[in-house]
Amino acid sequence: MDLSPYLESLRRDLAAAAAPAGDAAVQTAELLAGSLESSLRLALLEALSDAAAEITGELNRTGNPATVEVRMRARQADLVVSETPQAPPEPPPAPSADSGDVARITLRLPEALKVSVENSASAESISVNAWLVRAINAAVHGAPPPPSSSAPAGRARFGRRVTGYAQA
Image (cartoon, rainbow, N blue to C red):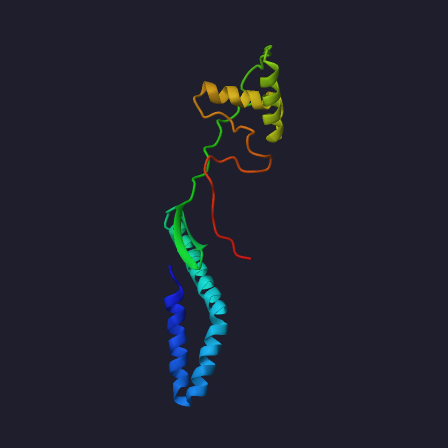
């Protein structure tokens, strides 16, 4: 969306308002409009951002998980509608401690796989045993595997990029 026509319209209106006062007032109005252009552009962008936030809120209230963003490209503002990613599926429940006897097994892993399992468990702040129980439970019950440790610790591990609008 090109903001220039709106700014030009304001410039013409200001010049027209100053016209009855004479040429000096018209020239002053033109100088004033030129110096206010960046402030007016910023005010229009803030209005567009507020409108996008209101539209996003209304979409979410009606059950449509989408966001509306204002993106700047050169001197143009673009309104972009993005689908909000759904919450990741919850992992299958871990077997409860009082569901029966606990069995002990010996598991032989290649060293590289063992290190990867330890890193994944550490990234999720759980024990290797808990991580393995969850992974085996997910495999047995046909659920997706637990998240990998490819994302840095503390960051969300969703399969889609999340974008949005923030206002300071």
